[in-house]
Image (cartoon, rainbow, N blue to C red; front, side):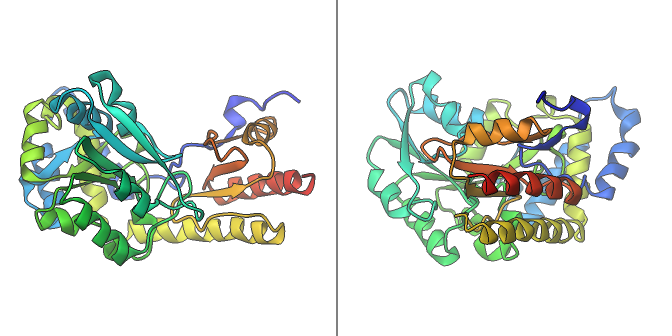
Length: 341
C-alpha cells in the first residue's frame, strides 16, 4: 500500500502540542505583526523579567533561546579537548551531539531496568575529566521521571563534583511540576543549569524559543558569545512566550487533555498485555514485540508518522499524543498490529 498523501498524514513523531498555542500567545503575535521591520528590543527584556519572576531567579541567570546544542559546543571548547559529557542512553542527544567538534567525549550510561535515568551508575562515571552531566527528566523517549526528592538530592550532591544540566522540556506535563523541578538548586547557587522550552506544552514549536536558568557566571559567559542576544531572537517568539507564561489557565488545560489521551493508550496496552512505561510526557513508549522500523513502516503506510527508533531498545516504539481523533485512529492501527504479533 502506498503511503497516504502528505496533507492527510497524522504526525505523531515530534512530541508537539496538537492543541495549539495559548489564545493569548496568538493575540500577542497578531498585535506585533506590524513591527516586523524592527529588531527585537524591549520584548527581550520583558520576557527575561517575566521568566525571572516566574522562576524566582535573578534576571542575570536567564539565557533566552533554544541553546542546548550551542551550550554543549561552548562547554566542550571552553575546557579544551578531552572533556567528558555524560548522558543516559538511549536518549535525547541535542547537547551531547554538539560536543565532538570541539573535542568533547560522549559517555553514555544505559537506562535502568525501569527505563529511568540510572542515577547511581551516572554518579559512578563522573571523574576529573567530566565537563557536565546532562539529564532529561522526564526522560525522552521513555517518559519516566525519577522520584522527586531523590532526584533533587542527587542533582544537588552531583553538582558539587561537576556541572549538571537538567532538561525539563516535558516536566510541565506532570501534575506535581513544582515539587519535581530542580530550579530551586539554581536559585540556591548550585552548579546546576535547567533548560525549558516553549515548544512542548506551550505549543510554540515553530517559533523555536526556550530558556535556560544557569549559574550567574555561566550565564554571563554564554551571553558574551551573543547567545540570547536580540539579533538571534525574533520578536514574535518573545511576545508569544511572554503571553503564554501569563496565561495561567492554559498549561493545566493542556496537561489534562494529554493525560486523558495517554490513559486511553495505557488501557490498550493493558488489554494487549504489552509492556509500557508510565510516561509523564506528551507521548507513550511501549514494547511492540517486533522491530520498531517494521511498526513505523506499517503505520506510515496508513498515514501515521511516529518517532524514530532508540537502539538498543529495538522493539520499543514512541508515539506522540495528537488530537483525540488522531490518537483514536493510531490506537486502532496499533491494536491491529499487536493482534497480529
